[in-house]
Length: 428
Image 1 (cartoon, helix red, strand yellow):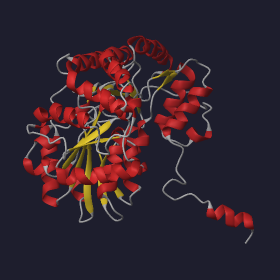
Image 2 (cartoon, one colour):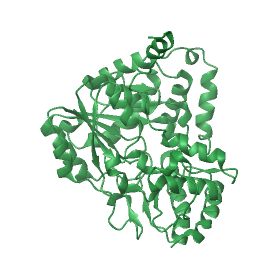
Image 3 (cartoon, rainbow, N blue to C red):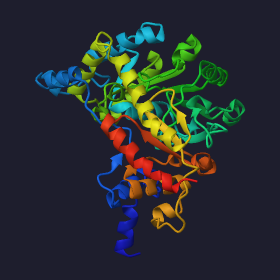
Image 4 (cartoon, helix red, strand yellow):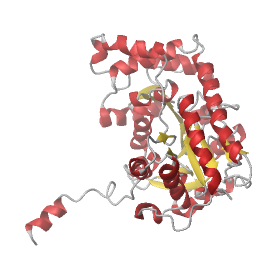
């Protein structure tokens, strides 16, 4: 064996990171760089196009002047932030949350989710995830050796022909119960849902919760868009004491306060579950960014008195309605979100030109990837193809849909609408 082959073998990457397909974010970014239409209007990725409110920015600046805020925070999070989270959420959960034992602050919600999997999932354990899914769930489950079992949300039957509600994406409970087996350790819920915008109804949550109690399954309830509901929103952990005892709830200060780059997330739940999330978090990154935790604490302390939650909810709903007006103009069906800031629009009526020159990394992908590339290249508008959030077996369910993020300045939304009107010449 040559020294080169030995060296190559020694530096072979771990299977958990090797051999992965080119991800959707890379493909969209490549299209954006290559597009002749510049600048690109990015309606794809779910980051805010504007700053946090002034009282949050001021709190961050003030925190940077404090010695203790520039040093390590306790691994479970700064006491002031844990107390602020507990105070803000205790009324919403209908019980007193103990900030010392029932809250852990993480480096973004995603790291918190990873910590939950690392704290409870071992090789051979199975985790149920609904399709479409937040793509980070999958690698986060597989890293500790877990196996993902998928249950698709059924898209609305009339989704290709008329405007529908995100609530029309439904679960077949028989499908869900069929994938449950003795290896099932956890189920992941996301409500309000990314990318669908669905808020799971109380009856749906009760049915899922009853199955989890019956089969002794942990529940990871990803509620990072919890401050942006447009229809009644039920929190999983409020359904019963029995369900609450098996539920970890994920939140995001970045989503709440328009600062996704701050990477401040948190989990709440029973002390006997939070302790293991905190243990994993401590080993992953030890602690999270101190001054931004302090600023987030001020956010939770002052948001209610300043009317920030309701103002933010109304403003985001207004952005949803403002942007979706262009789909009404074009006669393109879309799914009205019940919460969050993503909109799914159906492009079945858009006819892609024959023999269009798609690059190899797109040519063999589903139709939504072609639609996304075409939109960027010809119109300069970036959207996300949602089949990347599905297994190959179920990708057909979303191949005519594209996801748009409306958390942008109104002038950006208007610019995107003007460009999207260029679709008229490609519509059947």
